[in-house]
Length: 221
Image (cartoon, rainbow, N blue to C red):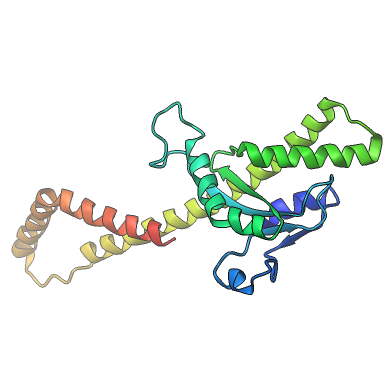
């Protein structure tokens, strides 16, 4: 996502530097994991240079208190980013804008305002005061590009998790099927019946164990 956002700013002829180093006056701030994702060296307009940190968040987290509070998870992530970078940005005379997106393609209002501002200034340089419809058209293209990047990333993550779950299930199945059995025919039938009875009685336990494994795989990914 960071690369996509930087490339989009470059289409406006803005110099977008990814993971800048030695940005802050106090070198210890760079070393303390306070390095933003993007530095806009020459943003359009007369404002300060801009630092951006990118985050993609879900819309069903604990911060969403009701079905109507659809923007609350984005705002919660925004507040976290502001707490991390807001003060240090002001100390270094920089403007900080968190770029917060949801997995469903929502974009936080502050970042949309920044993009709209940069698009407007670019169009002013090209053709004078632009029509609102033209700004909306470029903004719509940005939104489409961001949504496609989010969807592509999400599909890769889902495919990886599904593969992990499938491998775990197949491993358990192979262990169940390939157990070494050294019985005669009568004993084999009895053993199969015992295995089926065991499976019926302990199905919930097997499923719970599989869910625990799956959740562990997802949390590590």
